[in-house]
Amino acid sequence: AGCRKSNGIGHSAQFFQGDRATAVELRQRAVTSPVSRRATANRQVTASASVPVVQAADVPAKAEWKGAKLKPLGYSVLAGLIIWCIPAPVGVTAQAWHLLAVFVGTIVGIITNPLPLGATALIGLGVSMVTGLLPFSAAFSAFSSEIPWLIALAFFLARGFIKTGLGNRIAYMIVSIFGKSTLGLTYSLVFSEALLAPAIPSLAARAGGIFLPLTKALCVACGSEPDKGTEKKMGAYVMMTVFQTSTVSSGMFITAMAANPLSVNLAAATIGQTITWGQWALAASLPGLVCLICVPLILYVLYPPEVKDSPEAPKKAKEELAKLGPMSGDEKVMAAALVVTVGLWIFGSKIGVGSVAAALVGLSTLLIAGVITWKECLAEGPAWDTLTWFAALIAMASYLNKYGLIPWFSASVVKVVSAAGLAWQPAFLVVVCLYFYSHYMFASGAAHIGAMYTAFLSVLVACGAPPLVSALTLGIFSNLMGCTTHYGIGSAPPFFGAGYVPLPTWWKIGFGMSIFYIVTFLGIGSVWWKVIGLY
Image 1 (cartoon, rainbow, N blue to C red):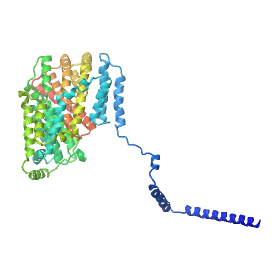
Image 2 (image 1 turned 45 degrees about the horizontal axis):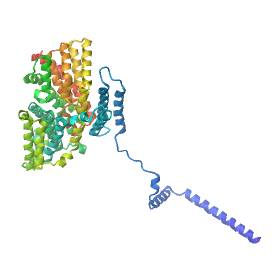
Image 3 (image 1 turned 180 degrees about the horizontal axis):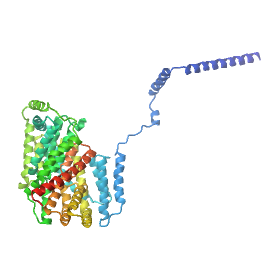
Image 4 (image 1 turned 120 degrees about the vertical axis):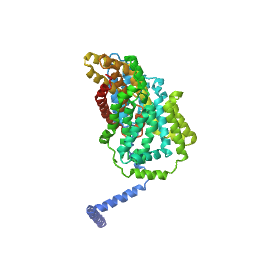
């Protein structure tokens, strides 16, 4: 019994001793510094790192979404669905109305940019085919059109222009003469393009094949490149300005844009008067010159370059020219190919050589001589992207016309304006503005002219507007209206594809400049036309 009691007391003593030890340990932990706790935690993390990574599978990492931007994609789909669900107006087939829904959805997608432009356009074509609105032959019909391929070929020529150093050489020459200010450089490009306009009837060839590579080389030589985040240094302003003024210069001469002769032919059939080259040039000369002078100044305020003055630039340009030395063999080949191509663009129609064929002659020369390689052409992403989205929009827009939507729209405008009983002056303003801004639905000036020129000219004459003035105004505006979008005229895709100007900015500036052009041509132009006796 004594032994059992002794053992019981011993066990109790051990228990209380252990309890006191535990209490002491808890107090020590309670007063342990935060640094010690962090050190302990670090040791635990280090120890756990040596354990095989089985625990990581218990908390899987959140996968990053790599697809389209969902919110912009939603806007695109919603815009198309809203139009799709609205019943087609009387006189419009369901097929035409639903194709309009797909077209608008695609345009919204191109504006909001959930995916690259080419991908968005291909999805639009895919929807139009899956829904039975367009067969394959119709959806891809515009890939056999000249304009998209001419623009793509212009990108390839531009690569050779820059790669060989010829672009830098010419750019340094221009800078050495006009380079004291960004505004001076811009004016030199604007008026050089305007001087060539009457000689080269393809705006896409003139802008994409000659002035895009020259402008880009000039921007690069001045240290303004989108890839380096320096596009606003001067390139964004220069690109936007040269594009905007190209729409003005193409409207100043019958031979400055390929579709202008179509306007002349339709006018002759409608009003019985043939517009001569001299009449068109004289009518457009004063308001056109005002635009060429004012547009660089307006954009200099609205969309200013970061670098405005560079007094040392001419001296530095001459130093860089001296470093370049004599022309290399590749530069000479590039110069010869460019001279031949431009020559064929000017005179090729007389010997049956079209604009695309002329560009292929130049590209073939560069490929055969090894100045550029086919691998480099394949790597020219903007060229293929522009070819894809531009051809897709041309196809959808052309079938909106073939399915009867555009003729219905024209007839509706004619009916409304005629029923309003307006005097010819306000009727003229309404009809001209509707003609101008309906170009948002077109990816080709020729398509717009073919679909709407005759109907709108007829309504103007019926309202009592002077026939010749009406015909000239619609013909000139058929060029100016291309300023609004990045797909509306042949010079837009190559300049936009250079990557200097964001799409929303492009559209905002385009709309703002459209107001200036309308005011200038209907204000100064109408007074000028009265002075020269057009009415």
